[in-house]
Image (cartoon, rainbow over all chains, first blue to last red; front, side, top):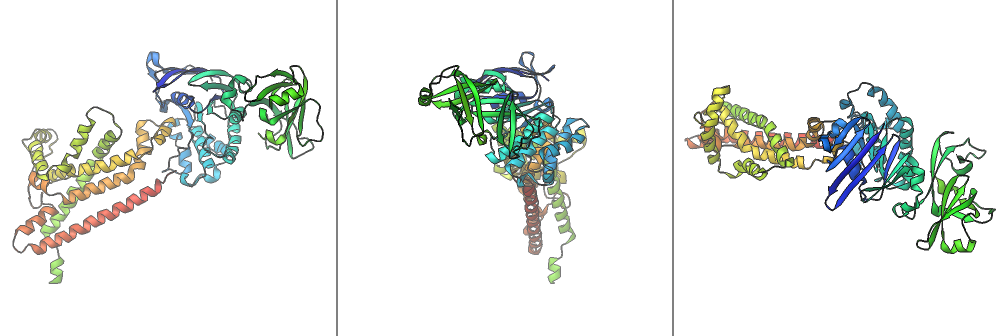
Length: 357
Length: 235
């Protein structure tokens, strides 16, 4: 599957001028609020008719303004999960879920019904009315409804933004299963580093309606040029790992990234599953000697490869540990006190609870 | 004596049946047009929208006699529309119960359109967008999302149009006169009773009937709208 998007659109004083492509998996459109992400995804969905655009899905021309082609949204078969659930209030949960099936025009959707119900864990809700569901339940139904319309592409516009942290944690595992167990490519709009770090295969950074960077998640999210966009609290490194067989401590999970092992609080995913760790720079301490008698479980040896320039009294120190680049944000004062220079061996200290994925 | 006072004569029953038939036909036939015009006024963006809006509301503000006279001119046997309809599909309005239904439909139309238009404007268009991304074309979106959501407003509009038709007098009597058994509706029959000596008892009987019918219509509409609203609670 190959999605190619190229569009220009003017809305009052704001304009979007962006081009990107996606080859399946989860492609995140990542940027701050007001950067034009939602405009872009609405153009892809066909809910907004752009001034000019060329959108292709494989060999199918979705929009081509040069040729005057504009496929209407209901013919595109792009599932869309909005920020708010937008469930139909006059239909039961079951009929909300099966709404798209009327139009999908394929018989095999019936078999996938049970699988998607199971994937999202919504079996007990089927006969209820949408009015009686919690925010997290509604959003799960909205995701199921989009999936059951048999989409060629799934668009998600900050599907977790309206939910509190507990509800986010409730839905994220379902999105991961969705990514891993279905083959539907996903375009995922978000401003949250942790969501993007956890879900995306590929990240398109958007600022002011323009694409400022694109590439795989780990390399884009650790770009120091994106730091102002990512924000002080969330900036950091993204590490791809695999869940190792549980060690002797059943309350922890061990994640291997290249030759480095990270110990994090217990997570329910099975051994061998790929997992992405987002390590915020402000959660990483540096020591010039290996510290002892600490509560922190992750003490990792590495070498400084880069020291960023000062910003608000702090510096970002990038450390290579066995091929993984981890960023630590420390004060300029600490940096001078420890005499940090490029090439110097250091130990990273990361609390396990800070890595709760 | 007491029973006799309550017993309705054949002529009175005829007027009641005619009124119910005229009002029901007026309400049902104008319903599709009412929904279309309400949709156009609520959603359409076109030149002359305020003129269409004004035309629709005209029967509400014109003297009913004027509306009746205009109907006579255009829909009478010699009128441009009336003669055309008679030649093509054999539909005659003048001095027939169909003409009474037409007059009632025109008089109730603004009330019906107003009620439906307000409910269309209250529909969350984001739901319709969601339906279109699920594969529903514009007609299906209307039938499966918009229409079910505006049902309370549609019912209210129908009842208003029905009640207006039951009470309609001026336009009807001007257009199709007051012929017992053909165009003499409840209101016209009451008027006729008040014009003859000793007609008070008949006028009172029909007045009570008309109050009962109006109250019943109102209660049915409240019931239906309540049921519909319960299904459409905000999600």
